[in-house]
Length: 243
Image (cartoon, rainbow, N blue to C red; front, side):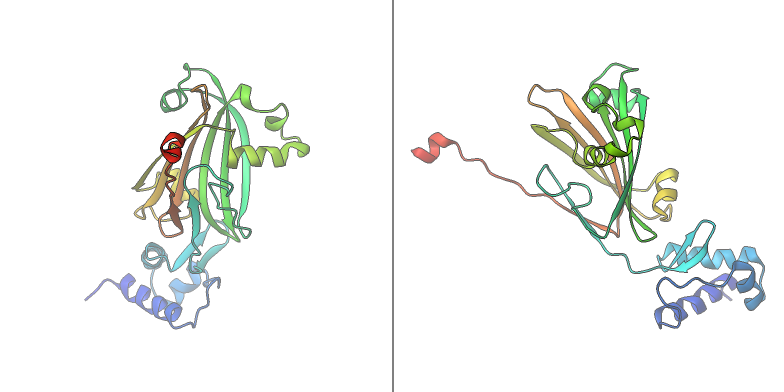
C-alpha cells in the first residue's frame, strides 16, 4: 500500500489538473487540509512537498500554499546589446535592486582581478512577475566606477542604480560562463524553487578597452523559467572585403 501522503498528493493533483483548483488559488490551511484527510500535519506537509517538487504548488512564506501559475519564460540575451541583457526588457517584470559596498575577497578577487579588500559596489537584484520570482543577480562593480550618490539610496539616483545593475558600465569585451546546477540554499529560498530543481547559472565578466574588469555578475534563473539566447556576429576584415 502506498504511503498516505502519496494518496493525498494524488487527490490534490487531480483537483489542480482538472481545474477544480485554479492557478493562483490559495489552498486551505495545512491544519485544515490535515483535518480533511484525517492525517497529521507532518503527513500533510509531505504531500504538499511532492506537489511543490512537481511545480504544481508554491509555498509563500507567511501567506500559505498556492496553486502555481504556469511559469512564463523570460529571455536572457547573451552578450552586450541594446536589449537588457538580464531581463530582456520584459515590461511585466519588476526588478528591485539593493545596493551596498563590500570588500573583495575569495572568488571576487579572481573575477575582478583586484587585490583582497578592494572596495566594490554590490547590486543585489531580483526580478518578479507578480508574486513569482524569475531571476536573481549579484553584480559587482569597482567602487570608483560608480557615480556618487548611487550607493546612498538617494531617490534621484534610483534609476541610475537600476541601469548600472542591469546594463553595467561600457565595455569592450564580455565573457559569459553558463552552466546548469542545483541552487544554493539562498538561491532556492529567493527563487522559491525546490532544492532539487536545476537553475541556469551565468557568470558574466565585462572588461573595458584597457583590459580592466568593470563588472562581474553572478546570475541565477530557475531552469523552467528562462531561455538563453546567444548570437554570434562574424566580423569581416575590411581588406578582405575590399579585395
